Image (cartoon, rainbow, N blue to C red; front, side, top):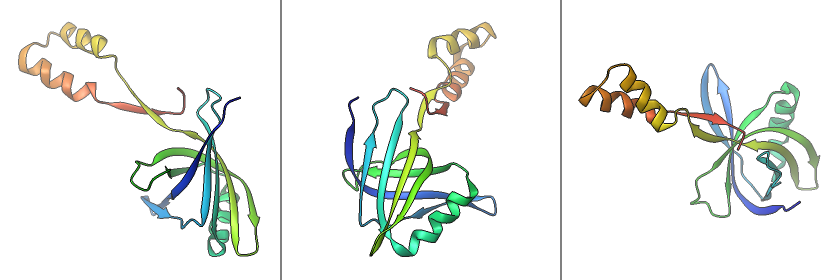
Length: 148
């Protein structure tokens, strides 16, 4: 198995409070992201964080729900990868807490094949500007998936 390891430089956890989603930035002392290269989009994340965030992650474990993470690797300027994850372990160290998280990378794929979409719209009798408008509105729709 080939593993690819990257430096973790940013970690945000999506939270929903009163039906409003917010991102909570987690300060990092250090961290690694490992792409398991297993064909399943599996990733392991180890984050070394300040001890004051220990209870925040303990509460996430108690809910047993998956969480959405925004993980930035290598450079702060990189776009964050979205990962659906669960916490595997929380380890108390002398001055920090180590969090091991297992997750799957979320990718987005087009909902429609452009050619199939165009043929469908034309089959509905659309032509000219209405066809262009309907095609443009639909061709860029994407769905999130954890499958390749």
